[in-house]
Image (cartoon, rainbow, N blue to C red; front, side, top):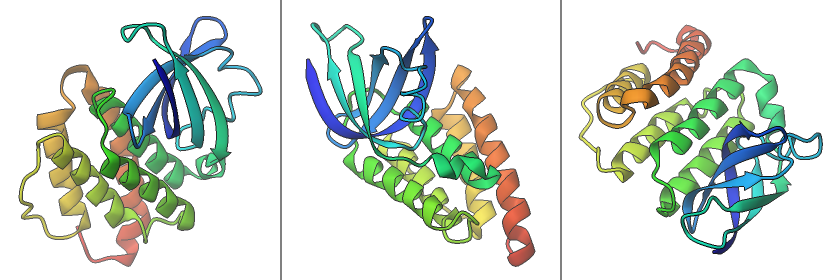
Length: 201
């Protein structure tokens, strides 16, 4: 197996003394995971940060083997992680992709949506211009995985609460519910940031 593709880093997990297992979202191949030798090194840690755009190459002798991955930085989003609200948003949107999506199933529209979501956060760290995009991104993930439904919610936070119920009931079950902690932190920060400026509840 040989894959070379543009990708967005979604999750990084320590493996062994110096390596990491990295999950990235690609447009053509969907979510893919690989082992990065030396991924914890000073040189590679800034490359393998959630939301970074990279070019990855994955090689494996057989399809069942975890491929070896190399990554080259295309665009760093590290600056977004310095502020609590953008950092919370980045954490949630990337962990949602890494946890909810099956590996090796292409979802080109979700790749584009994730890239647009991160770009919106970068353009407006204060959240007023991307909170609605977040709600639609979550619905896009639910829809793509077969859990779409008509929404009766009115207002941003009512819609986010509806998404929460659907994510918890239909998609992020069992051990996967742990990632909802990241979402709770984000929604709480959104409330503090936006409710003084909005009449929605």
